[in-house]
Image 1 (tube, rainbow, N blue to C red):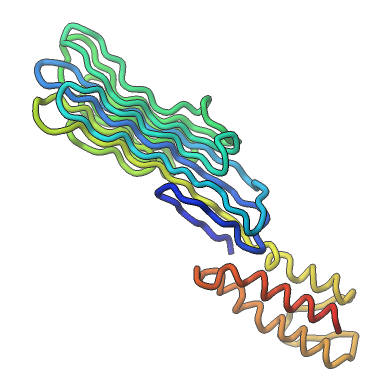
Image 2 (cartoon, rainbow, N blue to C red):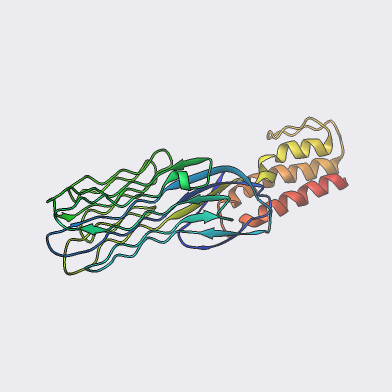
Length: 291
């Protein structure tokens, strides 16, 4: 019965009639890898973090901001990578998941820590996980490193493997995989892009973030209780309807509620009619009150 809406770019969401609470999941975007040619070590981008809240109170017909983080854009030779941006819903203080950092580079004699993933501790939410870090590099291990994996809804994103092009895997479930070292892009939902050790081409892009809203139409969820309270009787939704009140008008109206309940439930699967469901329920309830 629950409806899930997925947002892959920034927009606004207008709360439909009949929706009182939403569960919100957000993924920050992944950073892009750095790029530099020659015998050097180049980091991939960090993975995006994840945050979730349950039963956030919302108001019908109110617009809410949906900000989806953009993955860091890949860069050409001799540039550090770009950070992925944060994702948040309503306000930054309501729920927020951090984006991963962009990758850097260092000469063959240096040590390079992989770009950091978005930190759960810097996010806002009841459930939070961190994005994975890009792979580290130790002296003389030249080449481009893999990006960190995006966080999932149950654990952190994986880190890239040190001194190799192998990227981190996305956290379960839903986190995007990091891009392998080179021009490989991070996966959607926060995968970090690959670091490029080349004079030509561009490093891997970070994967975009994402926001999901999950909600029920509460007027339908509690319909039987509402109608029972209105008519003050014990009522069955069985095929054979029995009312202690012999009023044919109430009997017919209640049968109409029963008959239309299935079609109303089915209508929430159709985006063209989803916002009319609560109005239909209210019409039936008002008819019952007036009998």
